[in-house]
Image (cartoon, rainbow, N blue to C red):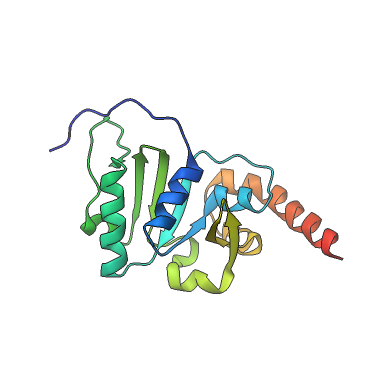
Length: 170
């Protein structure tokens, strides 16, 4: 049964990544934080992930979410705890956790799920963790299909970040 929403917690997306990594959950970081991790000068206030939708991975993720006091972000401030059924669905699960907002996505633009994204992933070491992150090039390619105006506005910044990175390697 939903209850009233608790106070907001301080945002610590690095801690959220650490918990996901330590729980051995299969996921790819996508969205704004994926771009920030790769040097894009934009802001990100949440962690967006696409998770592998196997029973084992879903059970690990459900257990972690329970330990992080995760609940769905609802306009009426009711608490709805995420379940394995939610994590198995094909939609988006927009959550608050002890460490900040976590958006768990079954698929992103062009209906791409975890396995579809693996060819476009870079593995980045962050605080002694190896994290799978969607490459900037893939983010740009996918955001061109987005209907979100914020995504369209970020495209030139992301493209310039790619150009600058390419110029450094030449």
